[in-house]
Image (cartoon, rainbow, N blue to C red; front, side):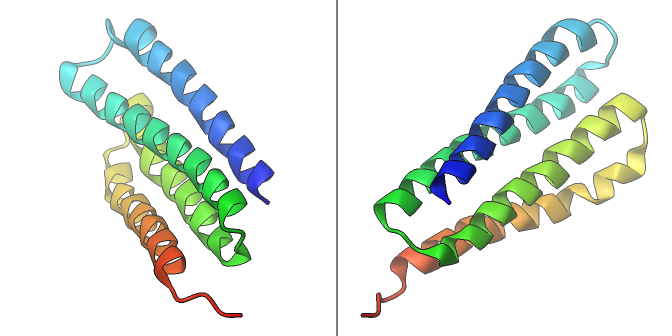
Length: 125
């Protein structure tokens, strides 16, 4: 279980580096500073949550609990929706995508909350 969570974290981190380089080099001359900032926000949150998934994998190996897996899904899904909607907004110019970005943010908050809840809950047995 923790191996898969760690792998997803590394994949998100690698893609984050590639998208960061793409934004810094390919988009810099083509986008307004505002749109470039939006793209960079997507990359930044993607990297934060890639590292969060790595930390979650470690936590799962340290305190084995299958009930931590929903948090991994929330962090992954939240990152895909939050950062993905920002990338698509910038690259496509489709402004309504900004309306779904907060849904990704809510999933990210729920993921972190889930982790805290599971780790602070009294252990049985």
